Amino acid sequence: MTDAALADPGLSVLGTALKGKRALVLGIANADSIAYGCARIFRRLGAELAVTYLNEKARPHVEPLAHDLGAAIVAPCDVSRPGELEAVFARIAQEWGGLDIALHSIAFAPKADLQGRLVDSSPEGFAVAMDVSCHSFIRMARLAEPLMGGGGTLVAMSYHGADKVVPNYNLMGPVKAALESAVRYLAFELGPKDIRVHAVSPGPLKTRAASGLKDFDVLLAEATQRAPIGELVDIDDVGLTTAFLATPFARRLTGMTVYVDGGLSIMA
Image (tube, rainbow, N blue to C red):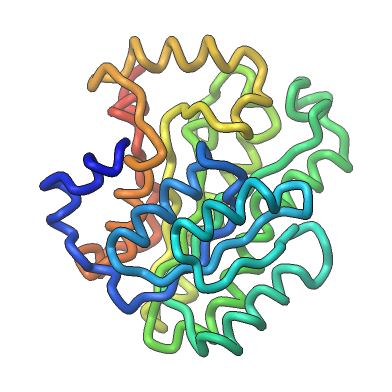
């Protein structure tokens, strides 16, 4: 989606619905990342941003994007390294004093476990995938809770393979199913504090993370043919839906898995 498209009437409906809001975005790796699409829309709608990068290797790819977005906070965050996620939230608490939106767009599994059969997955690989892709979202929610005194929105990124069998999605299917279940339980537990929790489930997208899946190009081609809309979604489509969930327009929605896939998930 071009900058011109970002000014279309569809986006103008939301206007400046996130003006004055503070949003943390975890998971930007490059300009093709889903997290970057979400950050772009958050910023376009008036939110102030905190952005993380995985490590020093990723930093040169993320910092220029964060600069273009005018991110107020840019920090390293590898959720598998003790203390790094906590350090991000400590900085947010110090510099902002509060938080309104937190987006978790992180997933990882060792290549051997990701590309092999689920039945052959190693205990170690399964544990790593669950920790990075699911439990880190729970940890994020725990850290965000005290900063969302006036309510807020937590969003995790999922995929249709959590609900139905998608060939070659393998280990990540059960892991994403656990993530979607965690979203529902967190929505129940945090609802009394007006903290709403959602999973967003995009259709197949050409991202670096997705490229690790076996025969992903075949999956993309089939998705284009089968989706009722007849075309793939892009990262800004995902960003628009994610931003909507964080606005007052969605104030009575929580605990949902929202599909952004051109209708692909309704097909048999």
